[in-house]
Amino acid sequence: MKNIEEIKIAVCEAGKRLLKEGLVARTWGNVSIRVNDRQMVITPSGRKYDELTPADMVLVDIYTLKYEGKIKPSSELKLHCQVYKNRPHINAVIHTHQMQASIIAAAQKNVEVIQEAHQKILGARVIKAAPYALPNTKKITVETEKSIEQANAALMANHGVVCIGNDLENAFEVARTLEQACTDFIEYNKRKTA
Amino acid sequence: MTQEQAIAQLLSAYEYFEQHSEGYKTWGKVTVLQIAIRLENGNILVTDRNKLLAQLTASDIHQEERNGFFGRLFSKRKNISIILYTHQEYASQVKTEIPPILDDQAQLLGVSVRIATEENKINDALCGRFAVILNNGNSICIGTNLEEAYVAAQLLEKTSKAFVEAAYLGGAKAINRVEAWLMHKFYMLKYSKEAKKNK
Image 1: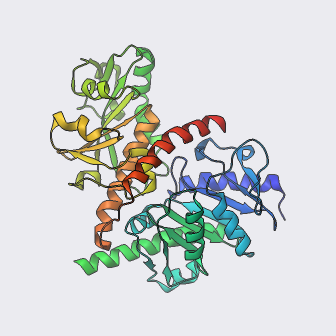
Image 2 (image 1 turned 135 degrees about the horizontal axis):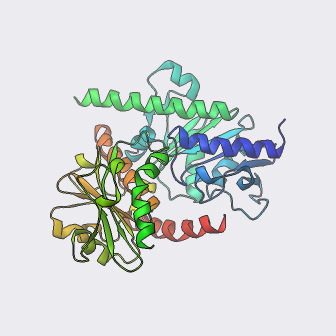
Image 3 (image 1 turned 45 degrees about the horizontal axis):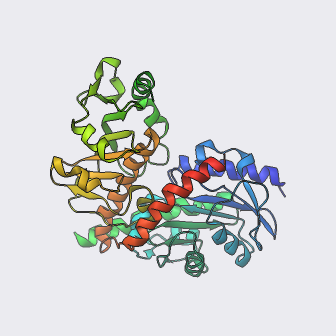
């Protein structure tokens, strides 16, 4: 198992990778990795990804939400903690504002996953959109957690996406696959309209 | 900002936009046609709209009268120091007001994105907002600094793309305007403070 410092480096690099892959911008979105049954490391609140260093990453207690140090963790930490509490095999959580999924989130629709290969990675034939709730509220955590159920991703209406994985690589694969599945779904609807 | 600092920033703006385009590459194409900057003494410098930003030289930067096109926009927004005049792939396709359809839109751009039907109505359309779409398909995006104005332009493109493409899914659903307004105020105050505190 990696130590906390190694995990902080991994979370910091993951934040920069989210930016590079076009899954987040500016200070939006966040990423975390589970340390053990009780702790996770998450990106900080209100900071730009390209300015982050591993020392800015925040160690958080999953059960109490208490964090180590003076740097405040991402305001969406409750959602991450909830996932880790309810899904013991999940070790990485990514919250993105990726483009194609944002289109469907703005329409408040579920995503019908058309390709079988995508269904396997996403763990479901339909990726649900959680009803709208203001960011950083209890409601957004509860509704997103309900919508993700046994799948590996959920849309958050008018907001973004949460993707989960057994490890960080898996969570990134889920995010990329979801983006492709969303593109397919939009194109399918365009053809239907035409 | 002094005149020398402003000229240096304008001359390096293209490079800055290129370096900070990561994260926006899937959103749609944003072309900055012109930049206006307000100096600490209130003077306004503008780049030549006919010159590509990548080829800008000091001779393409001019001082504008305070009652000129950009001066009139600056006069209504005391804390704004940058105005970008842009052409954007998806924003140029939008013909009606975009209500608040995404949280990040509401947080930075404000409660909606309006269309300014005439030049003398841009200030009204921009009221309390950070972006406006013009009748000619171009857009105005503003910020307290270059980074904020650039993000506003990119976010306008993301919002426009979501608005245009969601039409094929039955249309984008708006969130509550009061909540959107509160989110905007909260983001502008709290996140700017937090970014400073967390440094």
